[in-house]
View 1 (cartoon, helix red, strand yellow):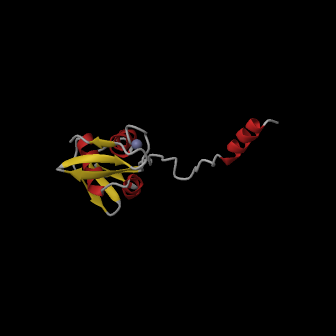
View 2: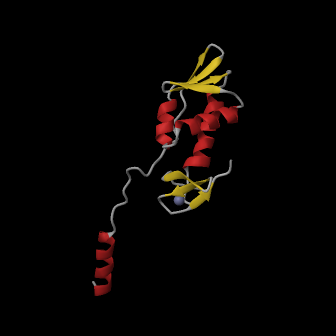
View 3: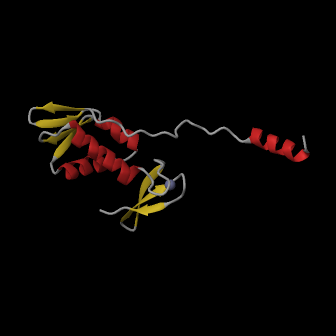
Length: 134
Ligand SMILES: [Zn+2]
């Protein structure tokens, strides 16, 4: 074995193992149920916590997107009207795409900050700063 090969082999051994924990982020699945003429997202609190966003921000977004009003009751989000689970889930996913995942590196390690009245998504993974619209 040449010195060069020896070095290569050593180099390979020193490559640190990729930390798996926290790498994968799965968008939570909305658990919905019908309540009279309303639709309740029973795990709304968990969804908000998984996203690390303000409850109000998430609830307002979902209400706007579904074109309805609603209110937070405990950890539930109560939406006026009947919505299929699939429609609700589509909005939860859409929220994640717009406000949680960094458009540059697609990681969820982001936070939203306000600078001069403009909301900016800051990515802790790659440092990207993405202004949010609306
Ligand atoms: Zn990023």
